[in-house]
Image 1 (cartoon, helix red, strand yellow):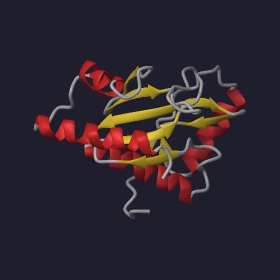
Image 2 (cartoon, one colour; image 1 turned 180 degrees about the vertical axis):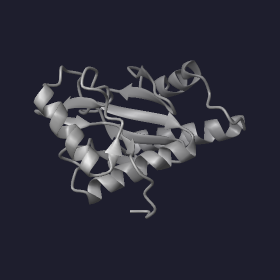
Image 3 (cartoon, rainbow, N blue to C red; image 1 turned 180 degrees about the horizontal axis):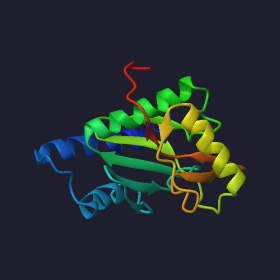
Length: 165
Protein backbone atom coordinates (compact mmCIF):
# COMPACT_ATOMS: atom_id res chain seq x y z
CA UNK A 1 0.00 0.00 0.00
CA UNK A 2 1.30 3.44 -0.88
CA UNK A 3 1.27 6.27 1.63
CA UNK A 4 0.74 4.08 4.72
CA UNK A 5 1.28 6.94 7.17
CA UNK A 6 -1.48 9.01 5.57
CA UNK A 7 -3.69 5.90 5.57
CA UNK A 8 -3.15 5.61 9.33
CA UNK A 9 -4.10 9.27 9.74
CA UNK A 10 -7.21 8.69 7.60
CA UNK A 11 -8.24 5.80 9.86
CA UNK A 12 -7.80 8.09 12.88
CA UNK A 13 -9.97 10.70 11.14
CA UNK A 14 -12.58 8.00 10.49
CA UNK A 15 -12.65 7.14 14.20
CA UNK A 16 -12.76 10.84 15.11
CA UNK A 17 -15.73 11.45 12.78
CA UNK A 18 -17.54 8.31 13.96
CA UNK A 19 -17.05 9.27 17.63
CA UNK A 20 -18.78 12.58 16.99
CA UNK A 21 -21.86 10.48 16.19
CA UNK A 22 -23.25 13.29 14.11
CA UNK A 23 -24.70 13.05 10.62
CA UNK A 24 -22.76 16.15 9.65
CA UNK A 25 -19.02 16.12 9.05
CA UNK A 26 -16.87 18.14 11.46
CA UNK A 27 -16.11 21.66 10.27
CA UNK A 28 -13.15 22.36 8.01
CA UNK A 29 -11.33 24.01 10.95
CA UNK A 30 -11.64 20.91 13.11
CA UNK A 31 -10.58 18.58 10.29
CA UNK A 32 -7.66 20.84 9.37
CA UNK A 33 -6.44 20.98 12.98
CA UNK A 34 -6.62 17.17 13.21
CA UNK A 35 -4.65 16.78 9.96
CA UNK A 36 -2.04 19.37 10.99
CA UNK A 37 -1.19 17.26 14.05
CA UNK A 38 0.46 14.86 11.59
CA UNK A 39 1.21 17.07 8.56
CA UNK A 40 1.95 20.66 9.55
CA UNK A 41 1.85 22.00 5.97
CA UNK A 42 -1.64 20.68 5.18
CA UNK A 43 -3.86 23.24 3.46
CA UNK A 44 -7.61 23.37 3.07
CA UNK A 45 -8.40 23.58 -0.66
CA UNK A 46 -12.13 23.96 -0.50
CA UNK A 47 -15.39 22.10 -0.56
CA UNK A 48 -17.22 20.63 -3.45
CA UNK A 49 -20.83 19.69 -3.22
CA UNK A 50 -20.21 16.64 -1.07
CA UNK A 51 -16.58 16.60 0.09
CA UNK A 52 -13.93 18.70 1.76
CA UNK A 53 -10.50 18.58 0.13
CA UNK A 54 -7.13 18.99 1.84
CA UNK A 55 -3.72 19.33 0.18
CA UNK A 56 -1.03 17.24 1.85
CA UNK A 57 2.56 18.15 0.92
CA UNK A 58 4.30 15.80 3.33
CA UNK A 59 5.62 13.44 0.68
CA UNK A 60 7.47 13.77 -2.61
CA UNK A 61 4.05 14.04 -4.28
CA UNK A 62 1.25 16.50 -3.97
CA UNK A 63 -1.73 14.60 -2.65
CA UNK A 64 -5.37 15.44 -2.07
CA UNK A 65 -7.20 13.92 0.87
CA UNK A 66 -10.94 14.08 0.29
CA UNK A 67 -13.19 13.85 3.34
CA UNK A 68 -16.90 13.23 2.93
CA UNK A 69 -19.85 11.03 3.77
CA UNK A 70 -19.33 7.31 3.12
CA UNK A 71 -21.73 7.17 0.15
CA UNK A 72 -19.92 10.06 -1.56
CA UNK A 73 -16.47 8.56 -0.98
CA UNK A 74 -17.73 5.23 -2.33
CA UNK A 75 -19.22 6.99 -5.37
CA UNK A 76 -15.82 8.62 -6.08
CA UNK A 77 -14.15 5.23 -5.84
CA UNK A 78 -16.68 3.69 -8.25
CA UNK A 79 -16.03 6.51 -10.74
CA UNK A 80 -12.27 5.83 -10.53
CA UNK A 81 -12.73 2.07 -10.98
CA UNK A 82 -15.07 2.77 -13.92
CA UNK A 83 -12.46 5.11 -15.45
CA UNK A 84 -9.93 2.31 -15.00
CA UNK A 85 -12.20 -0.16 -16.79
CA UNK A 86 -12.70 2.34 -19.62
CA UNK A 87 -8.89 2.71 -19.97
CA UNK A 88 -8.99 6.36 -18.82
CA UNK A 89 -7.05 5.97 -15.58
CA UNK A 90 -4.16 6.73 -15.01
CA UNK A 91 -3.45 8.50 -18.29
CA UNK A 92 -6.51 10.77 -18.34
CA UNK A 93 -7.81 10.44 -14.77
CA UNK A 94 -5.66 11.17 -11.71
CA UNK A 95 -4.61 8.13 -9.72
CA UNK A 96 -6.62 7.28 -6.60
CA UNK A 97 -4.59 5.29 -4.09
CA UNK A 98 -7.12 4.03 -1.54
CA UNK A 99 -10.15 4.96 0.49
CA UNK A 100 -11.47 4.48 4.00
CA UNK A 101 -15.03 5.01 5.17
CA UNK A 102 -14.80 8.84 5.22
CA UNK A 103 -11.57 9.61 3.30
CA UNK A 104 -9.92 8.97 -0.06
CA UNK A 105 -6.42 9.80 -1.24
CA UNK A 106 -5.66 10.95 -4.77
CA UNK A 107 -2.77 12.49 -6.68
CA UNK A 108 -3.10 16.24 -6.89
CA UNK A 109 -1.78 18.32 -9.75
CA UNK A 110 -1.06 21.97 -10.33
CA UNK A 111 -3.74 24.40 -11.43
CA UNK A 112 -2.91 25.69 -14.91
CA UNK A 113 -4.63 27.23 -17.87
CA UNK A 114 -5.97 24.26 -19.87
CA UNK A 115 -5.64 24.65 -23.64
CA UNK A 116 -9.05 24.48 -25.32
CA UNK A 117 -8.06 21.50 -27.50
CA UNK A 118 -6.92 19.44 -24.49
CA UNK A 119 -9.99 20.41 -22.48
CA UNK A 120 -12.26 19.37 -25.33
CA UNK A 121 -10.40 16.06 -25.77
CA UNK A 122 -10.57 15.17 -22.06
CA UNK A 123 -14.26 16.01 -21.87
CA UNK A 124 -14.98 13.95 -24.99
CA UNK A 125 -13.10 10.93 -23.58
CA UNK A 126 -14.87 11.29 -20.24
CA UNK A 127 -18.26 11.68 -21.92
CA UNK A 128 -17.67 8.56 -24.05
CA UNK A 129 -16.85 6.67 -20.85
CA UNK A 130 -20.10 7.83 -19.21
CA UNK A 131 -18.52 10.50 -16.99
CA UNK A 132 -19.59 14.13 -16.56
CA UNK A 133 -18.99 17.25 -14.45
CA UNK A 134 -15.47 17.93 -15.71
CA UNK A 135 -16.16 21.66 -15.80
CA UNK A 136 -17.18 24.16 -18.43
CA UNK A 137 -14.79 25.21 -21.17
CA UNK A 138 -14.05 28.41 -19.27
CA UNK A 139 -13.32 27.05 -15.79
CA UNK A 140 -12.06 23.44 -16.19
CA UNK A 141 -12.32 23.14 -12.42
CA UNK A 142 -11.76 19.38 -12.40
CA UNK A 143 -8.69 19.27 -14.66
CA UNK A 144 -5.15 19.60 -13.24
CA UNK A 145 -1.60 19.40 -14.59
CA UNK A 146 0.52 16.35 -13.60
CA UNK A 147 4.06 15.62 -14.79
CA UNK A 148 3.56 17.01 -18.28
CA UNK A 149 -0.08 15.90 -18.72
CA UNK A 150 -3.51 17.30 -17.95
CA UNK A 151 -5.77 14.87 -16.09
CA UNK A 152 -9.29 14.76 -14.67
CA UNK A 153 -9.33 14.92 -10.86
CA UNK A 154 -13.06 14.56 -10.22
CA UNK A 155 -16.10 13.44 -12.20
CA UNK A 156 -19.52 11.89 -11.83
CA UNK A 157 -21.60 9.44 -13.82
CA UNK A 158 -23.81 10.55 -16.72
CA UNK A 159 -25.94 7.49 -16.34
CA UNK A 160 -26.41 5.20 -13.40
CA UNK A 161 -23.82 2.42 -13.47
CA UNK A 162 -25.37 -0.75 -12.10
CA UNK A 163 -22.31 -2.98 -11.90
CA UNK A 164 -19.83 -2.67 -9.03
CA UNK A 165 -17.02 -2.50 -11.64
